[in-house]
Length: 396
Ligand SMILES: CC(C)(COP(=O)(O)OP(=O)(O)OC[C@H]1O[C@@H](n2cnc3c(N)ncnc32)[C@H](O)[C@@H]1OP(=O)(O)O)[C@@H](O)C(=O)NCCC(=O)NCCS
Image 1 (spheres, rainbow, N blue to C red):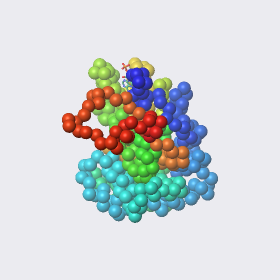
Image 2 (cartoon, rainbow, N blue to C red):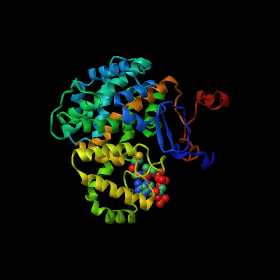
Image 3 (tube, rainbow, N blue to C red):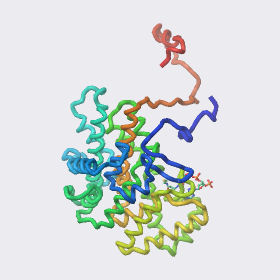
Image 4 (tube, rainbow, N blue to C red):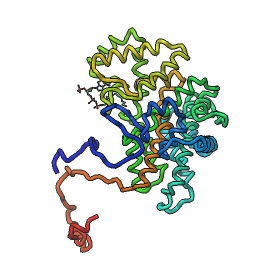
């Protein structure tokens, strides 16, 4: 084995087929089950996109009504899960809180299954588990932000669709239509992105025939990392640091001189711009008008044009979504948990796909440790020698 055989970070390695989404680097575009994501964001509810990701087709009116009914039924935060959250330090990282809550839901929902072979469940059970997690995450994320602010849980409202209810449970106020629409679009844009690190983590865990909750818990752990899910939060930190459009040029001069990465710009795949950005920027513009905050748009646009003209590196989805979530009233720390609530749809679609066509994911490694050596005085017994001497074709 040579250095070129090793694909560090699995860069460029195609590990499987997927029918869930397609990332196209030539056109900087993203398709969910064949549909451009920006078309879905402009025309669909997040619930309809969840159905599309799980089933492969957009829902009929009756199918959408059925999913909405099921989602409403499972919105409430289970008392046992609330007790687990309440047992965590109030300043626990919100991603730790969400990860722990999902793990607790898994323990609750698979209680009584003593045979590990049964924990994986049938495709029908796993679709239901997916819908229940999709329905419960808004309460977990919303309660997390409220708990950090010293506020009580707000009960779900049956008369509101997913996005409006999420905002209701977070802020305890009737949300404005403009805000609901921007939030719905953001959820759709964050829902899915092929074999990214967290989705791949979910697929690796699923490939061992572990259960869906374990796969999602692992995916949340992967998403927490700043090289993956944390960039929308980081965008807000830099915009806050700059403060005002008039500070952009000196701030950028200094940041580039220090070789700082400008958060919300650049992408490993999309080199000429991210097709999700215009849709999210349009949603941000509606929020800027709604909250009468032209200063936010001015700062956003000044930094974008200065950075693009100097480096030729374009914004990614996190650039408009960070300030959009901030204008809606979400704390910066809640941004990555919002990403979890959106991506649960993509993760579970991939888990279902992996289960339907499974192969244990188990790559090889090139060993570069010490040569074989032995503990002084140890004498192998005959059974060990017999294993070591078995012909190669019988090795598993
Ligand atoms: C996303 C990211 C990790 C992609 O990394 P990558 O594929 O290794 O980046 P590239 O190979 O395109 O980088 C080429 C050059 O542009 C620079 N560059 C890329 N993104 C940059 C950014 N946001 N700010 C400043 N410089 C950047 C790199 O430092 C590199 O410079 P060099 O050739 O002088 O070393 C990177 O763009 C980044 O860190 N962006 C900021 C964080 C972010 O927004 N993440 C969310 C992604 S969805």
